[in-house]
Length: 361
Image (cartoon, rainbow, N blue to C red):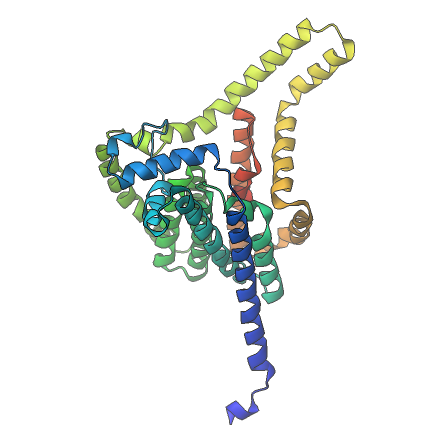
């Protein structure tokens, strides 16, 4: 019979792979739990999210935006939902970060499985599970872990849409990006880049794909209109549209301001070599910004893991030409890098915390 002819390896290998996947996920969960138990400091913005969560819990709606934040992200309602489990606001907030930081491991595995054989797949998942950036921030009172999970889910679902051409993955991917954007508005870039890919690159049933992908936007706008009425704020303020537009316009203004400031320093200094240095620096501000982003990115990857990233770039050109899925991920990654570059030019403030935008896709 077929059963008797099956080799033992046909059962053992899948079993070992299942144990390996489970082991990686459990390792990631344990590391995040350890970080939660040994993190005692609450980051400054975390107190604001807890304030909003308390306002929701006690029905003090007029206090939602009294803490200096003019919007309500997805994070405070989740803290409110977790509070009855712990009866401690800080613990509830950390639990939400821990939960979504741990759940994010699963879509990483599912996404890698669409591209690579098991050894590379499990290796990439392991790197994500133990990467210090994602472990540490899963213990902080921040919105990022929630955003990671839905951004990764959106990437996975969009890849499934590209493979199958079915509408449901496109709708769910769009919703995932929009939900992630509710926590971190910069992830709206993933939504836009995906729409641009469908419009300019996709040829098969383009209108159908675009309709499916953008259909959830109508529901989001209606929900936003209700929320804006309830919070007594404008729709532009609720969706932080002005803030997103400023990411495009302000970098050039700041760049010119820096040039003028350096010119002023040049005219006032009497040290020849310093004057020459400032003259060169005045024309190379864009290079300093680029080096700043790359430096943060390498540090966020964690130096040993960054080597794996560089190794993975081998043969990228051939993959981009032969596999439209790689082209899509390259578009999202390059768009995210450009956003981080513009953010650096605008504020010259950045931490490893924002580098997930490039690392995830």
